[in-house]
Amino acid sequence: MLKYLVIGSAPYIQKWYADRGKVYLDAGYKLVAINNAWVIDFGNTHVICIGSDFGETGSFYPTRRIINQFRDKFPEKVLKDFPDIYKYEKDNGSGTMILNVLTILLNNAVKVGKHLEVCIAGCDLIYKGECNHFYGSGTVDPLRYGEAWLLRELNRVKGFYEKEGFEIYNAGNQEETLLPFARKRL
Image (cartoon, rainbow, N blue to C red; front, side):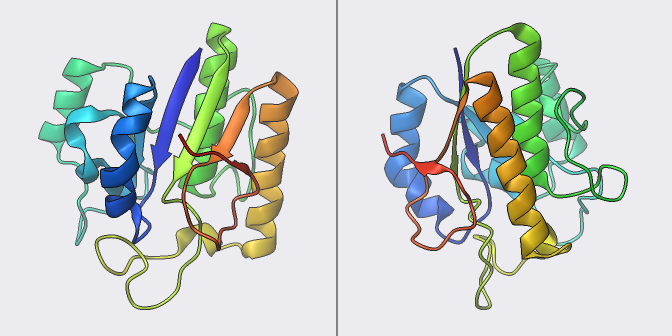
């Protein structure tokens, strides 16, 4: 069985991870960090997922040295490619990282024939106030095609997981979220 904890850049994620992260790691989940979230626990991050359009200016963009350290430790684990079995599409496959990550993990599990469970925290897709990311203010790229599109695509990905008999959960503790997944807390 493959078990992953996917973390994003929501303002609460550092506290949530300090309180709950070890519980997931101890339960055998591998840590997957989207974009800047890799700085929260670099030592335990198993996969860094960054978009090909992720800029270096004003961010915690992993330097070539950081990426090379990951490639030395996990040669196959720096993900930048779009999925190739299950797909979502918007303007020739561009979209948002949460969809990329979830479909990449799904595709990898299907390819190797293993059961998959994914828990997600810090990816609620709610952007309010001046501090909408743990490192301050960031762009709201996931909403660039609108909330209706994003909800439709999240539900399509949920359907992909259900079709394969895989589990996908919202492990965050936020009341407000766009994630259409059942809640799970270890």
